[in-house]
Length: 193
Ligand SMILES: [Mg+2]
Ligand SMILES: [Zn+2]
Image (tube, rainbow, N blue to C red):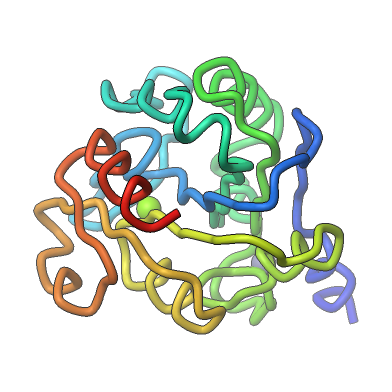
């Protein structure tokens, strides 16, 4: 029973009202900030110092993107449940993301895999929660770097944009778009909006 209650607690942080009809869903680690490799696995920053923004992030403030999309971060952060990161750090990082890219909202699954929640990607609960509140009207895109993002995106029939890295070369062929830099997003949107 305790798990069931906890499963409802996906985290939402809202910064800017949702006013546009198109949505750009962004994974956090590996897209906004550099992923951390810990014990040979892709992991999340556990301190403010480990949270290193990508240099190409500023393109998300370009007018083509800013005028057309709501920007929604969709992130698994199981370290919250593990207790290896606290909520205050998550909030501090969220503020930084808001300052950098005018993010509208940030949706976070705080659960570990064994909680079997609906919000942990590749499950679709985070985006479904968003669409419960804001109608699915215009175009949607999902930018991610792992198989979990890809599967989540595919389940919801949202075109998937892979940010190519060393660890995801196997996903290039099953993604709708694959980019080396966020600067390449403008080309995609010029041709697909
Ligand atoms: Mg990621
Ligand atoms: Zn969850």
